[in-house]
Length: 228
Image (cartoon, rainbow, N blue to C red; front, side, top):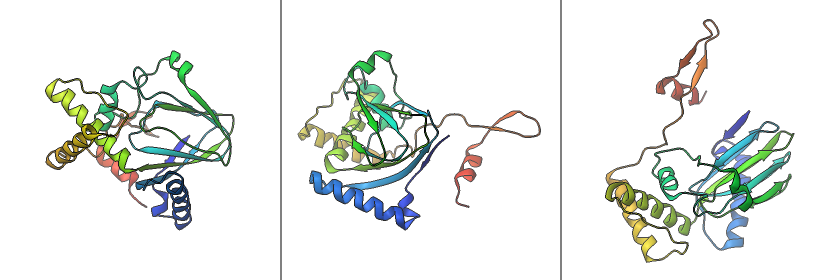
């Protein structure tokens, strides 16, 4: 079992208060204003494993119950191939990346117990392994102004690679080149809005009568996620 209850603060005032506290403390510590916040409750089974992936927004993980280990990897090649990172930003693919076992030699290993919180560099690949215990965490996604510029620069790099055959690079420092690329991305999204989500994997439903696998239609998926 692995559940991600997204944006819980919009439905439960208690979690909205927790969200405000988390980000107030983050802003006080960093001096950066945060926006586009999304705090989700992660509930996962013992020994569950979240595979190697990255997030385009910034992430802060606050652990509440059980024990889990987070492995964080460098943001550069070969750990995060730029064409794949751009594909995630363009929503051509989901967040998973190609993993090689030798990557673990470069990983930072973080064992998390209740009360621990951690954040990592934007778009840093990571994976998570639960211990033999039920785990509950808060997954806090957000953006700062530098993170927004960087996310849009990645988006523009993807366009340059795919449409013009260029091989753009992303620098660590926010400079005029990244700001210009961010402006291009914003303009491009106005003219050609990107998909709302990456292509989802095929979802199947087990029919109790026939015991056949039936592919769910997009309409059926929407009905499953609709509020009761």
